[in-house]
Image (cartoon, rainbow, N blue to C red; front, side, top):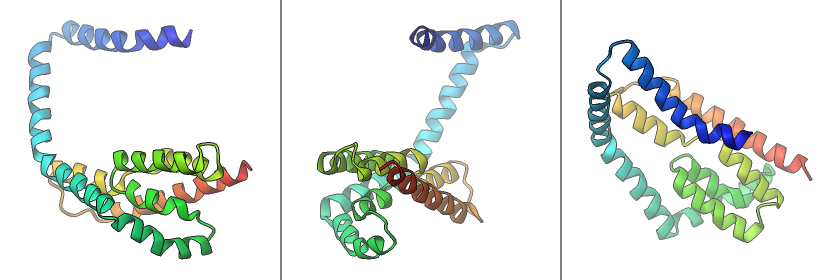
Length: 173
């Protein structure tokens, strides 16, 4: 039943949008082209930010800086019962989902996906956000300069997500 419904979901969504547009007398194809044009303008506007973020994360990972920072922060992390293996993943997750996914797969190979650390990493990835990526992309595309409480709020929410993910994973043992 679920598979059948999931196969029909996208065609039904597109069909209903088209039907609504046609019934309301909108020039559907012109609206589509206008939306695509605006989407391309937005993409071109945020491209430098995307390239900068991806380059910075790649350079940190390739140079060993991420491993060095993880090693330095492993001692304080273990003092607060934070798994030291999750330090690099947590830092990268703030900036890049794809790089964090690469680190997650490396962690799975070392620790195993069903280990407490693997479980905590899985929950962490699904309960936190790429804070700096989202702020830089969304605010630069809208040309917002004053972020006010966005960064402290987003970092607080991420800290809560990290803490709860570790609590949930180690509670399962």
